[in-house]
Length: 425
Image (cartoon, rainbow, N blue to C red; front, side):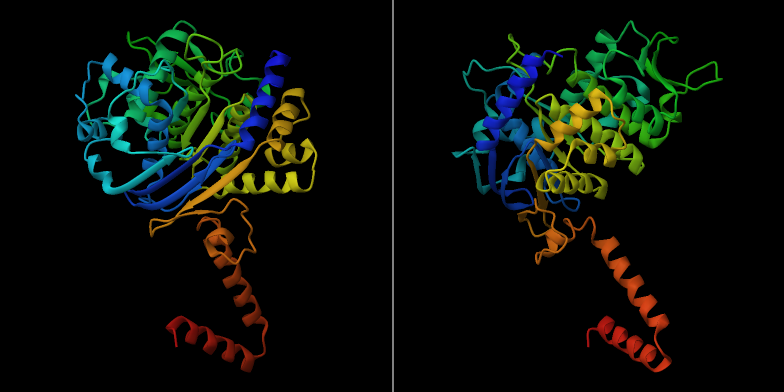
């Protein structure tokens, strides 16, 4: 890695901290009001159907408006400035109505109408700046065979089609002649590869199998002559592999993925929806290590998540920063050795800015970035509902232990009080 590149990226990050990107929305689908300022890593949490994906897809549209229109045009799709048709093509079939008449949008202080984004501008900035890894990523590899943009149907979300197209190009062209995809030595260093090998692939090799005249992914198990077909893998392996392909795409030998004519015209943002899908906590930790590597490379990362492991890491990193802890603390929670690459990732994580937002069922969006378990705000104290079940379980067990240890009369009194609380009397 070029040292000057790292210095340049660090300088850029300091500037960006002073003016965090900000998106304000009202009346977008289930979202009644949202005001989100993005850190170097931003995590959004909340129950299903509270607007998280719509919010993230809108962010992608704001960042990459002209590139999106150019992509549709490249694939012979023209909406003739019809906002409803574009919304169906971009967000997905049936989604044109998410943007109501009362909706408002302000991006970095500038108000706009989302319907204005249904047509391109004459801007000279046409390169892609945000890479989006969607929750439906497993659909990019049906049967282990990659799909290009045009193989999907109109009304399939743009973010899925664009992601699948990038994975398809990677597998068919960049890696097409190499055979082995993991653990290959040229994409990720040993610090990043080892947790993946241990916790996600179990020592097996990910490769391209072209024996049936079609390039498809296979998992080579030691002692077996033929690789396992995609549908024979574990659910977690099927969910993780397209995410790994996305990380490969984002981590070329240069610092960041170039998408324009110059080195500065590159991907700046990365969105990953539900990186934890199908994974054991140790596998989630391996994915979070990849997230920290993306941040070290200078990407601004946004995650949506339902996993307590993700928020535990964010909470720990913020506590380490407050306590002026060393990189050793970061390596301990991620179980990393004292290698030069591991130390770089850990030090980088301590220099970053973190934010967490909770999308509530009532349509509001709340800043819970402090993740303070003692907060008077229940949504922050239980981390947007993610840690609430564990907290209630601990309280119930503690009460049960105290009740079991109490004298008979006091035990009956405790049980009567608990019954009264349960009945609401």
